[in-house]
Length: 131
Image (cartoon, rainbow, N blue to C red; front, top):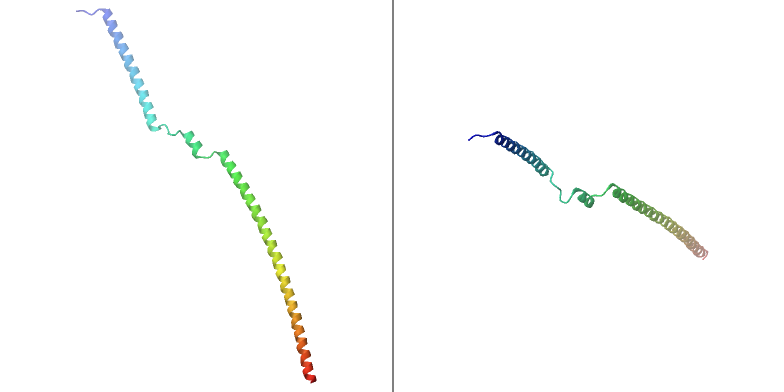
């Protein structure tokens, strides 16, 4: 049994094709394993990162808007407190003045009454001395 050149050629072609197929299979296995390692190292997020960020965290523009709204509310509250304080101080001043005026009036009325009592006592003493 002799092998002719055609059989050698077919054998060489088959071996070449087998080696090419083996090389392609090896390279594809390497790429597949690299993809699996990458997926294992950085798995897909559930939920995706963009969705989680949009749901749980504020963006810079939203934060600025909330900060501006908070500042406006604080300013309005400060203005309201200042207004109320000025009204309270004004009321306190007016009540203090009114009470001071009343006390002065009562003091002068009491002093007048005391002088009239002293005069009456003096008149009574004078009449007693005349008798």
